Image (cartoon, rainbow, N blue to C red; front, top):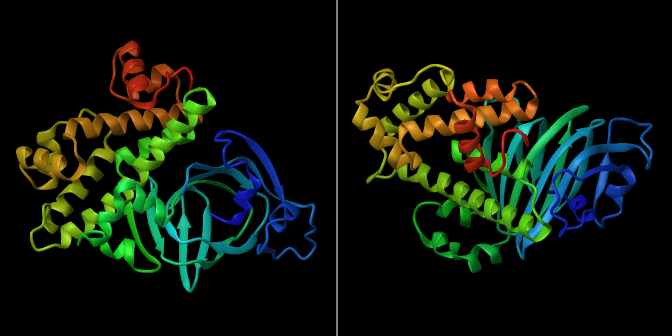
Length: 335
């Protein structure tokens, strides 16, 4: 989100491009300053190294991701352009200050990433601080006001749900990501091998979906609170309880009746609630969460393909590979 991103070729959408940034690299951009509690810091000292990507996927739509090690505590100050920022932290802790508003991100705070959407309606001062040496992994999709208008989202600015997020300066919305959002993040972090033009199109499609997911989350929250709520406040509590039950028991046989009983709702009521709130059946939600867990275990090296097959609830590795490839666009062996 800082103007350091301009040091990277915006058209080279290549996740996995390892780079090193020293103090001097930060200072090459106009209006960027760096401070650190390390009084011996020199222009050639490394601040960040690892996989880093900043790409303009289409005019006004930006994708920024980092899978890096920050070598020391530091603060960078810059300017943030107007637009919507959809931020997802997976690992690491960073403090942001946009204008006079403070935001804190902690990727290790929850078992699945939290999404935060921030709308700034004018250029603002921007400050980001890391407190110590750390591993940092996060993803940001930014959309300019022009992109939001030209790409069919302008009507949301006049609709009751989501109005506050898109109209009020430095308004923000935080939510616990859905299985679909988690899958989109995973697909961006580990895209299949594609030719550069197709890779950019692949990333663009998923970036657009993340913007829609962010706006949907903000809209859904306001709908919950509305007088004619599609999902009532009590149903929201039941949904949250059901999801917690599923997350805590993914490795066990799960039935809709058992989940519904624990969540305090009928089986048919739970199915309808998931259809309205998540856009899928309970079984589809469970299957997606198990596949996501298997994906993460394979990527981190915590599980073999055979173990990941069982983790995803499949007895046959071929069936698992088919479902995995359909969901993530690549085979388990590629991970």
